[in-house]
Amino acid sequence: MKQQILAIVTGSLLVFCQAGASDDRLLTDAHIHYSHDAWELIPPAKAVEILRAAGLKKAFVSSSSDEGTQKLYAEAPELIVPVLRPYRKRGELATWMHDATVIEMLTVLVSENRYAGIGEFHAFGDDMELPVLQGIIELAKQNALFLHAHSDADAIRRIFHHNPEAVVLWAHSGFDEPEVIAEMLATYPNLWADLAFRSDHVSGDEIDADWLKLFSEWPRRILLGTDTYTPERWYYVEDHAAMSRKWLALLPVNIAENIAWKNADELLRVSGFLK
Ligand SMILES: [Zn+2]
Image 1 (cartoon, rainbow, N blue to C red):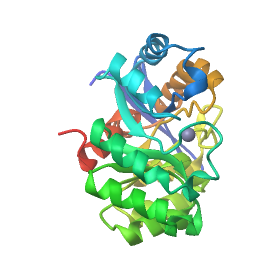
Image 2: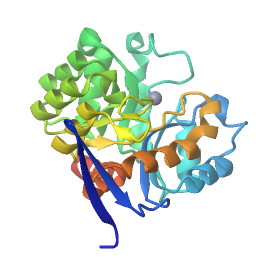
Image 3: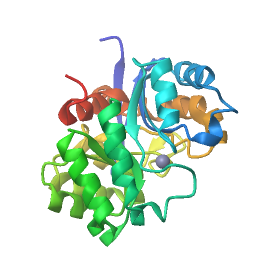
């Protein structure tokens, strides 16, 4: 092993430096969207070029409508992990769960295309009891798909209540505190959490102590994500990857590698997408 690891204890915070940590570390980005208003601005070939320039091993992609995901998957099937978003267009975040035709649409798409998961969808608390959400939980179960849920902890608990075998990727780790995330990961062995649109785990050259504790306790359950929820965010994918490499280099090498891409592969294996 080429990399040296220095451990410096500062108060309760343990900082690890990997001397010579590489700038070309492989990463998997678990939270990319390629929705209709991005297609013209960033055509599929360009989008794939951006993902490759960012040094991604894989990118989990979903889009409103699903056509965007299919365009990218056709362009680079080895890079794109297709995830089925239940929205036809931007602006359905708060209304989609009351539209009974959504399940019909998803059922047809699942029969026509290959997907790893359903999401990212937005649902909170008892939204999870609505027929459309129940339908999604069932569809995921029938087709061995993970659920990418932008949800609060309550909604995540309800998913597992309805299907204890569900495989769930918790978008943005619920924007919750590390303590709550740890408790959720401890309770649900098939729960993974992404760090999309979060920066509170790093400040300057240090990993926050509570987050470091979380990463150390749950090194196999955290994933990276950018969240290109608007077309402009696509111009940020490369910077985000570079920033991720920078803070990952502060972690012990095995934890960094897990968060960088191994955990994403494991999620895809457990849900059945990767053999
Ligand atoms: Zn998102």
